[in-house]
Image (cartoon, rainbow over all chains, first blue to last red; front, side, top):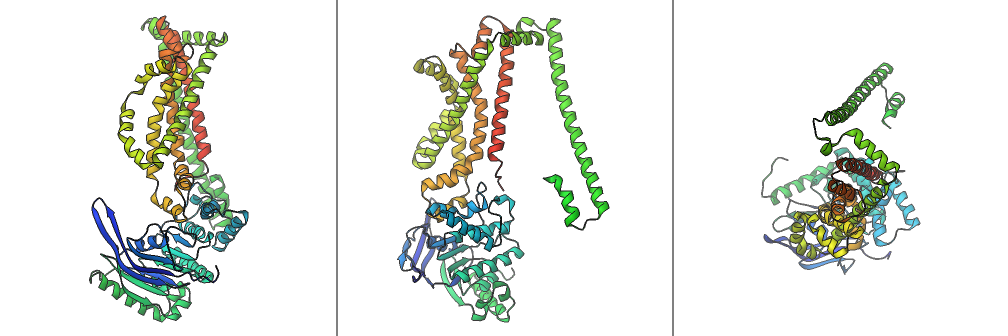
Length: 265
Length: 287
């Protein structure tokens, strides 16, 4: 397992949503490779298929055409190798924090005493020592999102899919969590794909930023983040002189994609 | 817990001592005011009850109302006392209470089971939807004679009447709850590869727990209707039988005293289920 190359690939992927109103093309002819240990962000206007891409990577549904590959093997359904973090924590209010974090283990059949100890260690590491027996309503929003992070990490996945996990948080908490997630994923050497609306967040956290256009969703630009920004934490990255340059490039690109509209915020 | 707050504030925060005592004073005043209000409400409630009983008693004795039809409180108490003293009321209470308990427990259980089936087989739920609507609007106690003919007069057919009253509405309420569960919770477990049984056990059922418990509470009331109507129709034992017997021999003191017994026993049962509800759902709250 250790030597396996957990890279993610999309090959000529298109997806069509069908409902009563008709069929709509969500993404068209996407080609993308995320290397092992790489952190990639997807940005773009709403309707550019960001969440569709994440769902297909997670194996929630297959693409209408094309292939989604993980380590060279087609993704046919949710797997232990892929972790997913949602915009809201969706902790179960009737479960304790420990049981919430361990739900993935329970489903995949790995809920042993040793694994539970590991969950406790994980909670402590993520800044939640001693809250294992508490219930979600006793925790603040930022704390709860940390539990959601622990829930994702507990099954020890190789690839992390982050679906705007910081967007519902206060700025202060958001910056803290960005650092925490970045530091954790870097240390574990995991592959990650982040969907976000926040351009600064995308630049500060990723190795590469991918700009998508809408109707249908497609890749219009890929931006490599300079080495010196990658190497530091997201918080420090924001202070580097090169940061604003990358941000401005991305900003201009997004404005172009949205048809020149939106000069202000 | 809240009482501990002021103490904590003294040691942890920089609030000045005199402020703290001021705040304590305000809190004490607030609590006194609340207590006074509660006492006033209780007194008024007791006064209304006493006034009603006194008026009834007077009206009956002075023959403002016909005591043969409306009886009066002291007569009712005498009737209750003698039937309790000679033990004749207890088998009736026991019968009706056991029918009711079995009725509302079974009604909730069967309703939940059907709701689970509908959730498991979406096709079935679409097929059955119009039938459920019709059955729900039908006055089910009208089916009573049918149960008596098919199940024989007695315990079984009375429980069947009770089930006919409780099951459909329980099924509809709980199934609606199953469908309302936030898609995000379902996504969380699906992303871990949960199958349908795991999804039901880990998310759907526990998330619907409060609704199931409240269905239990509603069913206590409905089961009383089913049982009393069932006993009206068929029984030789039970509080409903006692009432219908009272009607037949024109003993309205018996009818009204039985009604009081029903009110007391039904209230006790409802309170017990409420306590159970609080115990079972105390651990967690919706955000």
